Image (cartoon, rainbow, N blue to C red):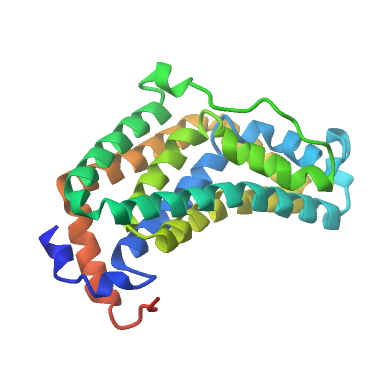
Length: 254
């Protein structure tokens, strides 16, 4: 923590060292969430709902409609997630004086969430916070379905999303918490859009991922556990300090 105190002024930038370190972690977390067993198998169903096109006709649907429906869906859940990131970041600022203790607490929780994601704590991992609501079919219902998806936190996406929210808390401002969650939404949302634009071609890739779900789970859980260990041991702050020094010459001020 003393390392970060030495660069307090630099920490007022949008691209602080902590954010530079957390952004790729958040984006990878979003990507892992997309390929998780609770999301990937549902992609054809989501695309069918948000475009109003039957599942059997998705491969032949117009690209413009598929693109618009998927983008509206992604914007819907992004609005929920980015708002949450800003909220966590704002709380982080309020509780800044307890940052050292909270960093270790959240680091420990991220480790637990990694174990949950890997299925090593099955009872926790099976809890579901989803709303069983299906909005109207078609483009008009696409943003609403995205919001329902965002609020629902399907079981596999919950641990990863919670871990990214803890990192948003670490950023200690609403703006940086929101930026961090935008990275998560890019990791989760871009594959949805790619799947919509090239549905037939992505089916083969989806089948390959399904055959290797165990590796998706191991990589995602391992990433979360490693991040938690960095926070608990204080190595996260040391890496942040090095990034602050490296990026001091080109960060953007707010």
